[in-house]
Image 1: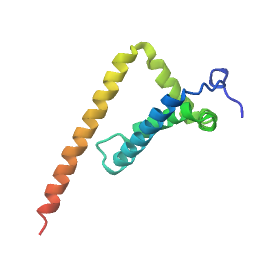
Image 2: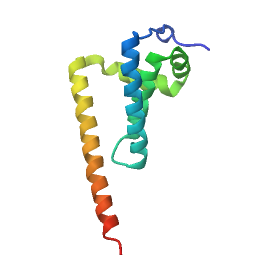
Image 3: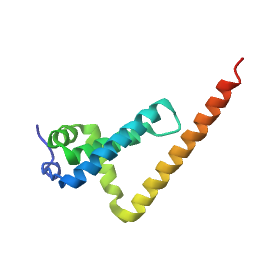
Image 4: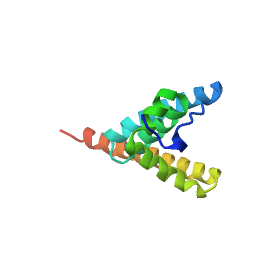
Amino acid sequence: MHLPTRYRDFRPLPWMAKVVSLLLIAVCLIMGVVGVLLPIIPGVLFFFIAALLCTRVSQRAYHYAHANAWYRRHLDSWHRSNRLPVLSRLKIAGLLAIRSVADAIVSLGKMLARWRQRP
């Protein structure tokens, strides 16, 4: 498998970071599934974040993902956004996640209200 030079080095995380990453992967996968079911939440974004985290935990996932042209294209786009400070990117990501969850709750409430009004 031929990878560009910058994608050949797998740098594993420390074990504590792996545990946190696995928990975040689970949360992102759940949010991704919810995003597929509710069109308000961007499910693909959560699946991409889960894949990104998975590539930091597993060497096999790292090499598989980086051999995929679609993933590399989006990863390059992600790396080009490095102009923002990390704290700002985390704040934006957190606000987007909170907004997505809030919109999903509102949408779910409306759906339940319509379901209750059925004869």
